[in-house]
Length: 112
Length: 439
Image (cartoon, rainbow over all chains, first blue to last red; front, side):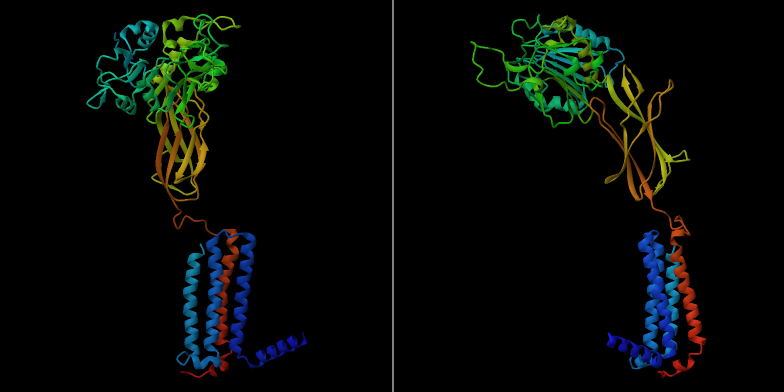
């Protein structure tokens, strides 16, 4: 138990110390998306699937947002820079925005 | 012997009567009178004279009355196939048999799932015999109409028969799994079918082939094309003698026989003078509208109305029933609902049955079907094909309160993206981002 505690403490400490601020922002954004998605899922279990299309739209918007944010995080992480020699952080962010716009159009269309 | 007038039969007045011998006709004078008073055009024929039921594929007669039980061969120009073909073209047939039944009638009846007992057998009853006509051999059975007559009033209404029915003749049985056949009159519990020549007091070393209520005395069939066929085990029950004889059963008071009225009702039914139904009109529309739409939409509330008329006594009358059902079918019935009859008044010429229902949540090509098949009545099959469309894209409900969490979620994802982007770009994170090298 103590080992787990000390391990998680050192994990947290190194996260606070070593992770760039921009990645922490992305992480916070992803936690927010995750919570929104979980709340919707609990709601659909309690309230039933009607109207199904609205549920799908709302839930998919969170899933897609989460996936796109994860992509952004991977591509802008300095440690992964060697894997994305041709992708600058600016380019990664532009991709992220473009994809999000497409997702939100689709969601708004499907929301009913 | 012919009388032409407007027929009270729905299908026509031309009636052919086949007799073993033209002299036999004298025994049935009351029957001919009854038929002619009902405007039938009766043609008597013996089995030796050539006669044809149809010419150039047209029926020459509308009804066929076979009173020739002994017939061993059809008259020239007729055969079993032509009689069956006559029925297939809508002709009605009444067949009366007797103990001296020839093979011709037996084979004809087999075509209709009716099996007569062996030749030279008779229905005996030592309890319910008539004390005059069946005095010696107990072969004239007095049949109580209250208990041994079909309750299908469309064929023979029980309450109209004034007395018990006298029967002397052969037993038959019908295939119980044939739903087109209806037993009209059957023998008392104590009756049995046995050989007519009772030899020298032969010991009964075998059971009768058929006994009690299993013995059908009169049965009818309505074919799928609504042609009607009646089978009687007795020619005697049609004779003047049986029409007028009082029924005298041991231990009961003498009452007039019901034969004449029974035969009248039976021939009326067989020759399409009653119990014929017709679909006069079918209407359907959305609630609040008058006209039938080109198509419906799923979950529409709509009204279906069918008007039925019943033919009897030479006229069409409103039909009454409480068991007419509507089915909405697309391969399977999606909705099955009993139609309610609109109360009849003096002006009613048709019976109107209606219901209001909500269409199923299923789109496709549906049939509004009324499939009304009851013994004794013409089969009614009315099918209206309608299309049921799904909602158009702009016909779905909007802003459902139950879906508000989803709307909020989608909106918050958008707002979240804006805030995130703003902070990411102008939130003072430049330095960290810049640490990454450019390609």
